[in-house]
Length: 220
Ligand SMILES: C[S@@+](CC[C@H](N)C(=O)[O-])C[C@H]1O[C@@H](n2cnc3c(N)ncnc32)[C@H](O)[C@@H]1O
Image (cartoon, rainbow, N blue to C red; front, top):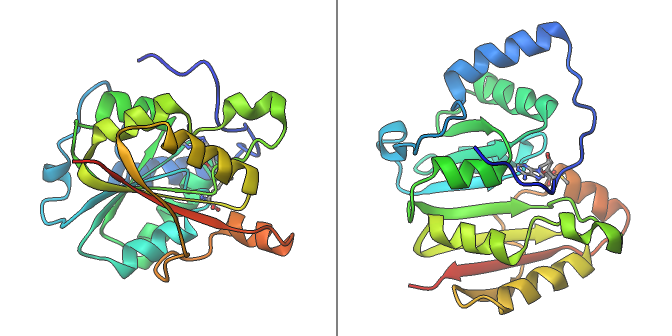
């Protein structure tokens, strides 16, 4: 499987103890989906789901767990590659008895490209992606034209893409990427009540950062 040459994430605090690694692996057997070069049958994994929604970059997964518990009729595929956060979300799923989340550990570009069927997602959540504020790092921002093309392919017509950022210049950059796309329509919205404040967002609010929510729909 070909991997992106530019990383949208930073390698940070990836160390976990041997015990945590063993626990994470055991929980992944139950609540995870292994990464393979094979398109997933999401309807077989979540037969009763009303909507199938992917969350990209869930961090420590607290917002993911709250959203999934609030909407038990939907199914959530949570994708990240930060081992401590993956362990944390897996253990939340077990302790809270959450039935509608499956966790995938890899770069979302790989997951979308090789494992997700065309036109099968009802929604995508991308909350507080790494802002990469320095100009020399802008190329690492995840929201690019090619990323939008990939998301558009995997969304159902009319499916939604909800994003939030606490970095105003990144919000402007996201909007400009969407404006250049013929596949999406939408724009800025007020924060919906159902979206919990995430861990990363809380840190931004403490620094008086303004939060922007964006909601776009794939054109039919
Ligand atoms: C700034 S954190 C935000 C975490 C969480 N959404 C929050 O608001 O607290 C960004 C997260 O995105 C993940 N991430 C970045 N690039 C990714 C990629 N290409 N595929 C999957 N996850 C990615 C990082 O590992 C990190 O956990």
